[in-house]
Length: 478
Image (spheres, rainbow, N blue to C red):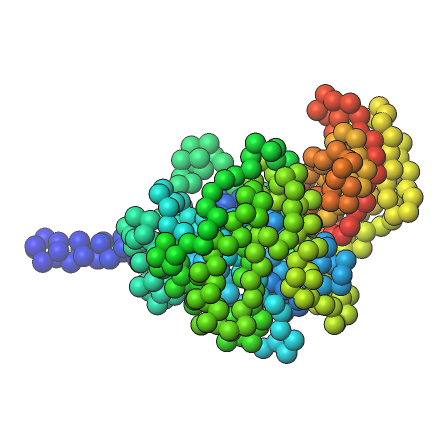
């Protein structure tokens, strides 16, 4: 065979190899093949689940929150519903200016079309904005999760280059533009070595609004000390500021009112003026932008969790204080908007359930501590749902001693196998009272599900549970 023929064969093989390589890259990343095969319990899964429902929720929301886990787990949805308001919590774990800007791009067309504009609230966080030694708030996983197009990556390459160079991550940024599926290398060993998947949720399931609850309690020793005086503009990351300005310019173009929100820290409000120089500069560029400082709302040490985020009680407290601070008022029927944004399954009253040593009263399930065969307290009749959709069961324990487990189960229509997801209540009451709420997310491959309430005590070798339980809703985004 001639040398020219060998060269042609080599070039053809090389071209086919490169084509196959980029086809795999496209399947894993652009077509979300990794996520669909492995599950949603990754940073990418958390972001994309939120993006999937963003446009629908942006169409009906009274207020939309952007930010980090201090927003995602710091602003709960239930207090807004109590006031006839619909919130959308677009926060994600580790999010900041990079994520916020691209998240707003996702919903800006819907916001522009709306006649009645929601208020946009964007987190204004010292830890993310200020230069500091060993700052890890690069947002690379959040960026690569929400930016799914090389075109968008290249269009924003100059500011992203400056941003990631501040964190010594230019090579990773270039790698992400060339081969975005390289982000999955970090999952290779656990997935391949242990034949594992990423089923479930990344840092907890979310309620109807996008809020994910935390349930532990901080101690006085966790109170922080730190900078209290205003920081000069030179102390901020320039690329973060540019992305913040881009966010504000895009937000203004939608016609929505805007508020900068200093999310809570365990400095207990003493850091409320640290960002004042930046706010003063931004208020000249963007007149009408408002600010809520950490001293404008009031939390106690017990309102934080062991990771110094607001726990569910603190999140409820913040939400109730934010409603008047933001000037939010309901002016449209709540039920009509909820129907437009969500499918709600019909939950049969507890009187129609199979009960074991429990009583149904006033829409709640009441049960005393006792030995129960199989630990089952109550089981629902079949509940109709739409298959292959995310459904979230929200329940509350207004009174509880011990731990109760709630399970959603179904028969997989494809495999015939029984499937189940569970959630265990973690809070004793009092003092949690109305803040003791839990969320259970599932994606049943079936047209019906069954809900069971079980005594977790005997299952875990503990004392039997007693108390009251209330089902709030079983819903799915349209």
